[in-house]
Image (cartoon, rainbow, N blue to C red; front, side, top):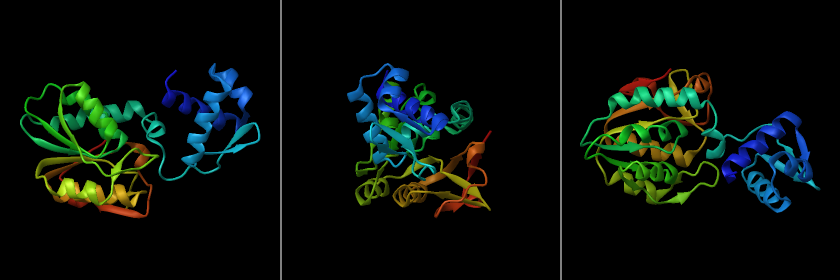
Length: 230
């Protein structure tokens, strides 16, 4: 079992039982104690659980900045459906921005048949998925956030501001009262840089984002050129 899949399974088990011992997790996952302890350590660093003597307890409230492994495993059908719709706004020969959201990640398979496409993203995982699909891609560089696996900071923003893209595809954590908001200031700042340096903007969202408000405002819905939802 891959590490990310195993960590998602650990979270699902803890959501059902709230707390489990290492021995119980080993039996459920068919994994060694050393492997389970490494996973618990990584999940604790992300703020999702607290290790106790011989086991772990799920934190009552998930932090705003969930690990990519968790986000990409949530609402998969909806996100893939939204990504398929957003693909209609892709055109051969363009330069596009993709943010580090789990929704735009699912755009990667739709790009492989478009010739002369250039993608700029602050997501190493998206960049890898694009490379596997034969798409020319540039990764921004910058500071890698441990949980979301997004590249942020002045170096990432400087890279984006040095490019003029035809269109920026982005998502965020919340949509409410006509505003698009995010939980991470660094990711918000990078999204804004992409929007400022793209000719058009396409916002992708699934129903799980509706009605949720986070502290960092990305932009108003009225400022977005295209909104793609379910």
